Image (cartoon, rainbow, N blue to C red; front, side):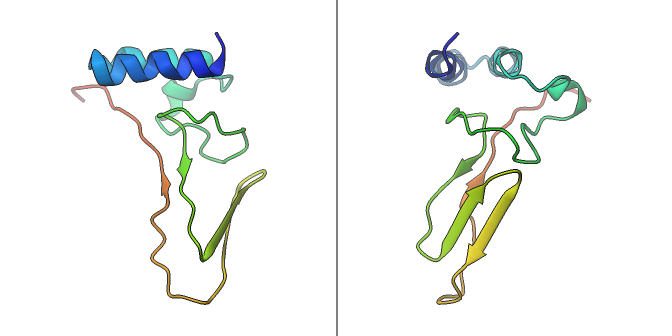
Length: 99
């Protein structure tokens, strides 16, 4: 399944159907990170994979005073021109109910 179509399907499962478990299982099945859901719920925690632009991937939002690069890890460079409270990196995941 092409990434764009897969991302739309996951969006549909989450937003319209409220089927969070199915959405994250669908997302995990499309990724090539063995054991991703068995080990933890944070996708690509070392920032070694290309961004997919999907809702369950990391999202980097632009900031005028911070340069963010993702090449074999995440690097943030602050320009020092402003005291920046950096809140421009997010990751969404869902946990199964119960223990």
